[in-house]
Amino acid sequence: MHKVDITDVKRKETSMQQSRLSHADAALPPSFPTDPTNPLTHLGTLLPGHDAPRTGGWDRRLGAGFQGCQFLGGAREAKEAHADQSVTILHAKVAQKSYGNEKRFFCPPPCVYIGGHGWRVMQDHLKAEGYGDSVYRICGYMCLDTSNQTQADTFKLVFDEQPNSKRLFACAKSLFISDQDKRKHFCLLLQLFLGNRQEVGSFQSRMIKVISKPSQKRQSMKNADLCISSFSKVALFNRLRSQTVSTRYLSVDRGAFIASARQWTAFTITMVDDQRADQGGFVLSEGFICYGSVVQLVCTESGLALPPMVIRKVNKQHAILDVDEPISQLHKCAFQFRDSPNAYLCLTNDTIIQYQAPSSIRDSSRVVLNEGSCWTIIGVEVVEFTFNQGLTCLQSPVSPFPVITGLEVNGGGHVAMLEIHGENFSPHIKMLFGNCEAETMFKSPKSLLCVIPDVSVYSDGWRCLRRIITLPLSLIRTDGLIYRSSYSFTYTPELHLPPPTRGAAGGREGGADRGQEDEEDILLETIHQEFTRTNFHLFIQS
Image (tube, rainbow, N blue to C red; front, side, top):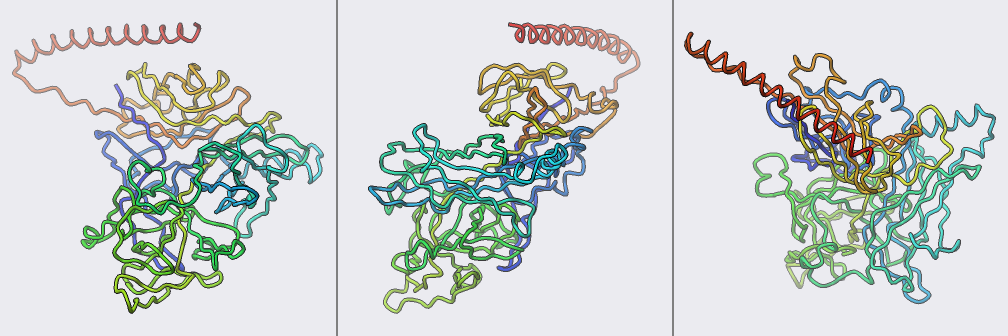
């Protein structure tokens, strides 16, 4: 009988190396156990070409300790992985409400990235059919998810190709929520079309909380959704002289940290246990981040990291050194370099520098800052949708996009069942283990049930193998459209212990009894397997 483990590509790093401002080291992937006798719990990554709706960032390659694992995607994955298409939405977790005639545009503005070689495959397919250039150009619209939206409330996205990337980029600069909208939470809705008005699909952001203004009160557990926790994603921006046009966002470009007026970067913020870190390396810890904590910012896309910094509260352009309350959304803060106590993270024009801050003459617990050293911090979300149309160009939209949020294994052996929890499921959706389509039953729009394929499908000599096998999990629509997922499934072999040695006579008698018991166990297991599988098929028919 085989052990099975299910894992999501969402991990927390356990160590990082100190980095420089202009060119930092990528965060190190964790190492995973290779002993097949131990359960595998890999909060790891998928191989290139199997990227899925991304919930985490940093280095997405397999760790050095993952050599004992065989990753199988099958021939179909190898041929079609190059045709993946991805749509990524970056947005803030909170938005300020606009009152009266004012318009408080979302800051940072929601951004959309379109990438993957599949878009080029689709363009070549349309070219071969004789369509012009304007047909396969991508256009998009973004708005709030409400039924009474007008054309004036919808922002048209203009996509530009990034110079150092094969991705397209656009941002919605003028979106806002008025006081006429009484909702406390809302989502953003992205609609993509081709030039011939053929709909690609609709994509929804995560929930965004509506606030009237940044909270100045000390945060408690009652307002946990306004606090910023370790290992969450944040964005930083600076607004000189409180002017919107002078807003600059902390970003990463060509291996360096910059201040950009247009693009912003999502960073994973982690607390560093300063006392334990003195023993060597960085020890990361969980919990809500408070002022006075040592933190590190790591770019979710490139893995570039800033050195450890102490986060300080800012009040009237002064850094306050004796405050330890939790940090809240849209708070103004400063970042003091841990190894250079007088240096603070600062911008000047488009460059990121270290500002040498003088101490306050009147109050030793305050440090005088310049405008470039005062940052506003806000939690952000990164939502990625990855799909594959194969070698054909489908005419129907990819939406509604099914998303897996959790997995649950029931049973074991040859009749192990996998219950899939998520959203936007339909009877036309099946489960893919690598390149093998599993028997799948639709239970509800939030639940599917499938039979886990026998591991012999992927390896003929499984009984003789002593290594783990990991497969990417995907969803496939009846027309062949594949929806990538951030989950993988791992088959882990069990090593059978050798029978205990006994005396000659005792061995013969014990061997006969043991052989009879084994035959009975096999018979019972066979009956159980057939009974379970029959019940499953009856359940599908009903």
